[in-house]
Structures are given as C-alpha cells and as structure tokens.
Length: 450
Image (cartoon, rainbow, N blue to C red; front, side):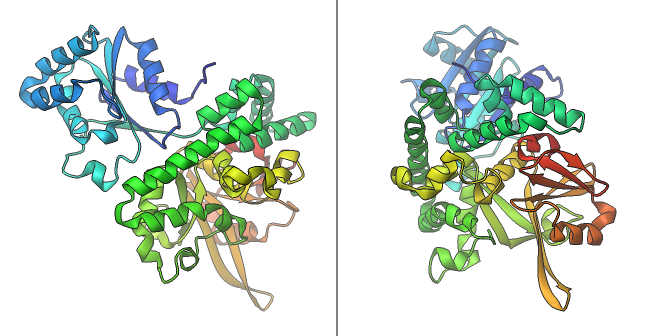
C-alpha cells in the first residue's frame, strides 16, 4: 500500500524548474515520511539514483567523503560513490539522496560544490538540522532549495482510504459555496477518524492494514518515545525545559486560555529560560508554535509578542495519544469519549489543534490575537484563535464549539481592523453558509479556506 503525498508535486515542480537549484532539502519531523518520499520520487523520475542513509551509511561511504569531499575532487568523489553503490550515474538524469543529513553536517556543506558541478540532482532529508550541534562549524549552502513536509492532510487521508467520494463532495461544496447536506455527517465521521489515527504515515498504514486502534496506538507510542529520546539526545543543556513543554502540551491546550504558562512548567523558571527549548520544539517540527500579534495588520517579527504563545502538536493523532496517557489510553475518559463519538468533533483542544495543523500545512505561520477592552463597564477579553494573511489582508479565524451566532471577539476585531481584514471565517460543526461579514465553514472544509 502506497500513500500518495501532495509534496510529490512540489518535488516535481522543483525538478522541472529551470530557475531552481538542483539541490533541495526536505525538512520535517521524524517519521513524517521524508525518506520514503525522496526515494519514491528518485525511483520514478530519474534513470538511476543513489541513496546514502547517514544514520547507517554503507561501509566506505564516509571514507569517500573524507578523501574526495572537496572542491578539487568532485568528479572523483562521484566516481567513487558510483562504484561503491554499484550504480551507474547519468548526467542530467540521476539523483543522489542525502538521507538524514543531520548526521553528516560536512556532507551537507559539500552540496555547494556538487551543485556547481552540475551533473546530477540532489535531494536531502533532515530533522533537527538547525540544532546547534548539527550545524556547528559548517557553512549552510545557499544553493539549497527547501520544502517542508507535514503529516498527512485530511485530503491525503481520505484518498489513501479510498474515500474519494467524500473528498469530491467536500471540494464541490466549497467551490460552489453550498452546504454539504446529508454528506456532512459521514464527512465529520471521517474527520474524527483522522484525528484519532493522525497523519503520521506508519499509524495510517497500520490502520489501513488492521482497522484496529490498538495497533495504531502502539505505532504512535513508538513515535512519541522517539521524540522523547531526541529531546534527551539533542536538547543539550535545556533537556528539562524541552521535555516539560512537550509533556505539558495536552494540559496547556485543555485550558480555555491555551497559552503556555511557563511558571507552571518548572518552578522558578521564567519565559526567557525556555527560549532554547522552544526553538528545539519548533525546529524539530514536533510542535507548532503560535505567537500573539500585537498589530494584526502586520505579520513580521516586529509585531510578534514572543512572551505570549501557544504550542500545538504537529500531529493531532499524536496529541490524542499523549493526552490519553499513552500506555493507559484504554482507561482514558478522553480517549473513550472521542472514539465513541460522545465528545463533539468540534470541541476543545483536538479541534483547535487540527486547525493549527491545517494552517501550517498550507504554509502560514501560526498567529493569534488577544486584547482587553471596556464593554458594558467591564474589562472584557477578546481573543481570535488564529490569523492568517492572504492577498495582503488579514483573515480572522475562530473555532466554535457552541452557538455560532455569538462571536463577540471576531465582531470586535473586525470593527477595529475592518479596513485591512477580509471576511471572518468561523469553523463550526454545522454546514456551510455565508453572510456579508462571515463565512461559516464546516471543519471538513478547513483546508480549502486557508
């Protein structure tokens, strides 16, 4: 069984573009499918390819890099590589994959000279590649194009499970701006399944093979264990802080105010003490950081309040497993409620986390807005769950779990920033409808409006 990824078309555009460098690096969390995608692409789109896995390289590989990995000996380097791997390389029609490049920083630096040689294309894959110990002492090649790989989207999930009819109905309804009608319920059921299984390829494959949640949970627990091991191995002097942020994601998101409360993570620690740990969480793409915007008309760094932020899990399926207590998930009331459908698919941290992953998969940074203003003699808090920027306009997005006719925060926001904003988007468990001020969008359509 093979999962079709939209990222494949991104690679194809890179390969066929005359303007792009002939080296591209695929960045993404561990186990998100980078290596699989790179090899599948090279196998189909080139006459030959060599895959160098730097996590366990073929004996002799690193010796070739040491002896011939310099500007003066690029051709001999390629000859040696061809012989060692028993693969004929064809100028203009071969690809060399540098897999898990974070384990060989000097090999990444050598990309500059390989690209200048001009004979072949190069695909790199990497996780944690900006962490200090993985980038120390090397010159990051400017010749690299880059792409980011995220967990499977809801669309990819539907296609893989053969639910194209549901996807086509969702697409058609959005294109024609019409309700889903009777198809809304089965579409929501598939979305709930997607949030249980998640978008990491191995759990998705396990579900397709077995239709069994236990095998899915075992696979997700392996991934979470791997992430914890990575923190212990790579987080250096801030292991405790990174571990605290990672482990506390579910409890932070379960609160109405989902911002990270640093004082609750480690007693005596302040926000500044977590800066390296937050960088690790973001760079590893294990979590998605969402920052407050002080002036929503602008999205650059000058208007970001780095002391106010939320941290979402990159994959909603992993969030459910982490929240349910991993090995004790069968006794978790949250897990039981979500699986049985008693917990609304449009309620709480799961839904908001899902929306955050949709926004990131569509290439937007995560931003939110909050302020206090007087209302009826009281100091009232107004908060917009997410903001995105499209066509030089800010779009406020609110995730509703209750009455969609009451949205005081987004009303306040549009009144204050109406000149620079587009219609507000309200993601809801209900069906599609549109007014002069708002677009009410069912969650299953979230990917189309981003």
